[in-house]
Length: 481
Ligand code: BGP
Image (cartoon, rainbow, N blue to C red; front, side, top):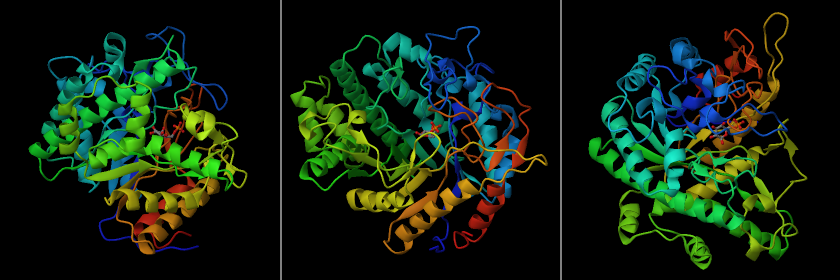
């Protein structure tokens, strides 16, 4: 297996999001977020989004793994693995419970003071996402999420408060988690979880129109936040965050290749705007032709140019394969409809294709396209774990997945010359799945005793992967065995 030492200062660690582990959903003044109205699903059954909290339903994010009260113990375990960085989000509703409040909630701000101080105590650098699928529910109901231009101001106010408060305790920021992860909405969902758009009763065209409008406002909000952040602390590194999945044609036919290109254009435009500060031609033409975006001002275009990001953060889980048998290139709109199964790849228990080399391809592609430092801020395998009678957990499948991905990452850095800031695999401690709401879809090096039904005593224990990852970090990536 190929391995290489990573550059000095490489940020090894892990990544989580507030709503997926904190719990304490209504504690110390926290308001209700979109994640608080999502029920538990399964590998085959999607989560339900309810109109408010309905008694008797199971909302796993309400208590999650109660990181809110366990963070000291949890960060200590991550420090034991040698973490250099810990990515989390600031729950918007802890700071602005309704999203449109005039003043922030001091108790919420204080929680993150303490969390970041704990990280620094162990020499762990916090990496913070401002909005990670946890938009205040009030902003969804009252304004229809980011379809409303007012949301720009609410987000920028939230970002400004965070930048000022954590000016000296956080250096690495990201504005919106997986901003591109909203065009492939799920029919069964009531609300697009990224931008908070209520999708009920909208036609396919209306949904797409709403998505382009909302994404535009999110991009403007992000650019404004980048500008404000750099004023508050010029040493801030503020990045974007996309879900990156290299796209492949199922066959070598021109129709499949063109479809793969078009698919990629419709996915990459979000980061194109973040990095270049302008819309790419194909997407601008597509949305104009469809009459999708009515509100984009000259001032917006200036803001986008002035608020470009410092680095490109991305999640990598799998590649995407497309087939023109499913959708003709010129008829591409709902991206999910073009996706075909890749016959060469194995899948996880949740059907996610496993493709380590895709990570190297991703790193090369993003480097060539953006000429910016990259940051892998999510990667990992969701799997069922078995606890043995003596309490041990032999998660060799997880080690195997991560080892292969890290090896490809190291090739990209060492052989291809990619400028990479760090590697933060998803869910270093078991947490609530964003997609299914399950606890039993586990990513962690640290096991948490809680299952899908919410049973368990929340105790933490080390899986086999814990010691393996500790060694990887200790040798700066050289020893992957
Ligand atoms: C990404 C999200 C994360 C995380 C991850 C794994 O898209 O940014 O929040 O959850 O996917 O997905 P899941 O939790 O559905 O397994």
